[in-house]
Image 1 (cartoon, rainbow over the protein chains, first blue to last red):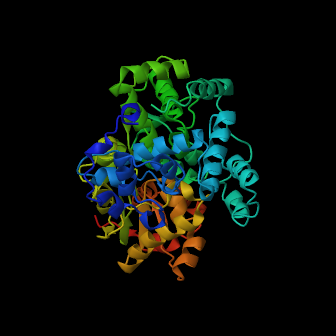
Image 2: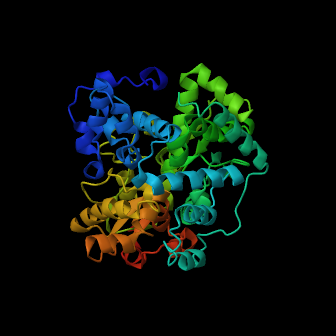
Image 3: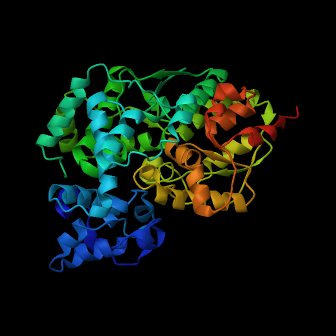
Length: 176
Length: 290
């Protein structure tokens, strides 16, 4: 991993500032400093534990950990890598299903339009999660305030965007 | 003076008022913003969570368009879009192989040398030098300046002197005649992109932010990020349920607050588009003494 993303996890000396500052540490099954410790120690089975954890999906990429890290370990980049590996190896924690569905619905909307349309995103997310009733009470007032555009605004030539998606998926998402 | 403008998706949808108020303030100050033609989404959280190359290619397409259209500088008011464009720029400028791969992925020429401005840098360069002569009102209220994550971190991208205790917004609000409060949550995360997928966590995190602002007597909260705004404004009913109390502090975009100090009518700043009523903040305003 270190060679792939250029983050040297061995620099971490376990001071715990990342976990102390993490806004969602109490909701995480593996705390941020423990994620780094597991990557350092490589105790058998650590990969499955990390890739199947809820923590990697709860990480908001707020970068509080990195900005306070005395060793400047970019934990947010480690988390990006672990999420991508978790999807690739089919290890996503069942409790993270809605979070992943949201990300997928988001990217599908971009692939089709080049821009995000909040109506399309919401419908796509609801179809994926079957949370059909969520936020329905917000739609009328959002619409009246002109915050929802039922007709998506798109880039001129959507095939340009589709091709970008195709090329990066051929490279297996980079991950590097 | 013409500056490039990247609205990003939120400023065309749920945060139209951020764009509207930015244009209103720029107009009074004689600055013309020109939108990058045919821009696309920055990829946001979803792209960097799921596909590293896509997270660079999507913002890079917009940067390449800006270069082709001859812009030297572009302002990116959305903190999240700014973070993605700046991260992509850092990646392509820092590694020639990433630059080459990205050019291939987007099938466009790209140098990555266009200057990206945060909303603070734009205000600093273009608005503040002429603001004083346009400010006719005093906001006359205690305000909590809320930065959230992406305006403060990571510091190599946001270019802030003090990422743990930034003062850029406070300086702007003092100019507008408000009294910024000292508080504990100005760079804490609001829950960001979990608005739909984990609304419970957004209510928890945004609830703490709102409660601290209220406890310290804030009469308004000023933000510069569409996600922070929507989590603190649109998600207020969920926050109220979480806190089990009613906090009605309105949330203004920094450009709306500046616009009010310049005497721009509330409707021209999109204050009618908020879910938490803004009348209380507007009613505090007094004429500035000559």
